[in-house]
Image (cartoon, rainbow, N blue to C red):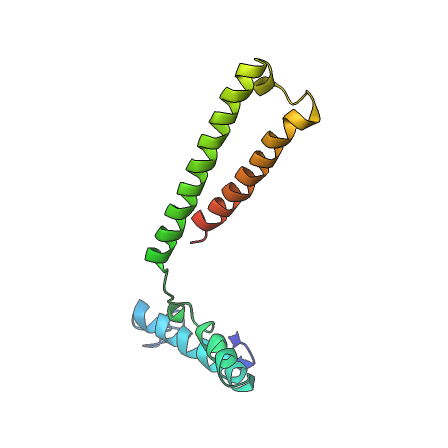
Length: 140
């Protein structure tokens, strides 16, 4: 069996050439050991510090345990929701104001440029805030 730059010869237990380990746990341990040996060279060739630590952590899926920062994510998402709520209220007020002046304005994108500009600017703010919210919401 080839793992990285290493060649391993698997020898069966109890004379059974199809049985390489006594248990599933031993199989996992053996595979982990072989992969660690193959990745050891990679770790040793990295610059000391975060580069070698990152290589080591990447050498086995079980080592990849990181903080979620759930509390911080929640605070940021709540802040973004409040920003979106305020922008939504602004859009609703704009719709009402425009409907009082001309009932078709909220239904179309046509009309004088000076009347369309406040809506365009507000919708750009909403889009930016919404995309920022979506990016934060699906980060983990």
